[in-house]
Image (cartoon, rainbow, N blue to C red; front, side, top):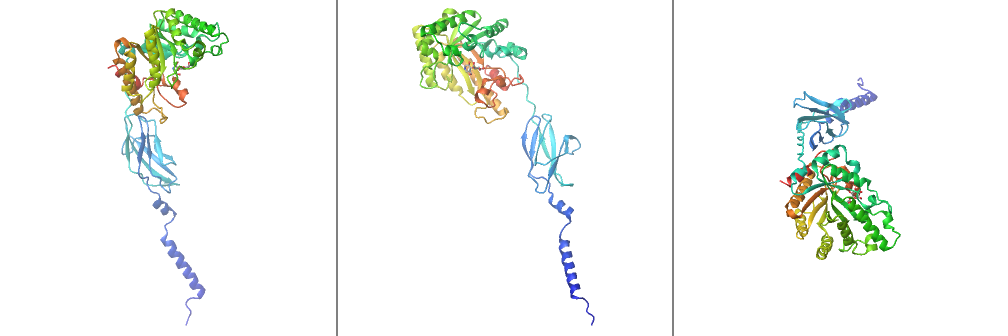
Length: 455
Ligand code: 9MR
């Protein structure tokens, strides 16, 4: 009988059949990719504002990139450049440079080499409406019963600064150029050049000047800190400085902060400044008396910070004022530096502490107003929500001030014009937007808060 298969032939046949059976169960390369390249799923709008939105989706495991489409129509026949299958490797896209208040349609597909998945579901996203411009009603027009002040410096008296100052304020304060370190830089040599520019600017524009500050430990020239003469000569030097300065501006400077921040933050004790060391505890009343002698008509203030929240310091300062009033030492008013935050102090505390001043029949100055929007450093830009909160705090401050007795009203002074110019940025070394104008001289919501506080 004929042997049909040799043993070796059987082996070959077996191997062939085995291989055939294996390969017939496997798809080819192309079909494998078609099976595994899924469409992006779970599209979520993760950020949205007036001109942009961000969409994120679950990463597709075998995709190497994604192609996104943005259209003005759901049928995707009006693409928004450059989003006509714009390719990117991440499972997220920032769609930018859009129109505000406009609906856009978005879809995305996965890509691997030259293979494409089906498109994802279509998502409709509507950008936020453009913010209405804030009203540009001048603050001084609305504040009819008190002055509206602004801190200025000589390098910022022209251009847009000038236009806004003239429109908004009727009282200016030198932010730093009318302090002793600037006006009396070396013994026997006064330098009133910067102070003159500021006072002349105010006079030319029919504004008052609030003089700030004759004596402040933090703006004392080093030659005074290291004064070589006797204590008596020191006192004579201070008297000459105060009388020279105050009489120079008599009739032009309506009011002066004579001594600024004389008390320590704790313990209710006087700060041990060079003035106290050389002249004794009564250096303050001497300075007030010399000021009054040099200009009998100017209003003279004591000015300090944290007066609302630091009861010990406030009581120490008010006790000093009570003592002055009892003994006939001249003093007309008390300044609360309003370096506050969007979240405090509360309106009720501002009001009750203000009453402690006005109950004494003193003028009350809300000086140095700025409202930190980012005290906890939790923002990298000023959000709409936070600017609303800041606006509300400004409104509360103005409401409190506007409600004090007319006889105690004097001025509410804002400590700088534009956010980036605020001393707070350098002081805290973090982002903040504490003022009523932004970097581009745009009016902020906080400004509207001031106006609303007077409605
Ligand atoms: O804001 C002022 C800043 O520009 C000056 O460099 C600084 C020193 O003169 O003074 C800042 O203003 C302070 C004010 O005179 C008194 N209260 C605290 C203010 C912030 O430090």
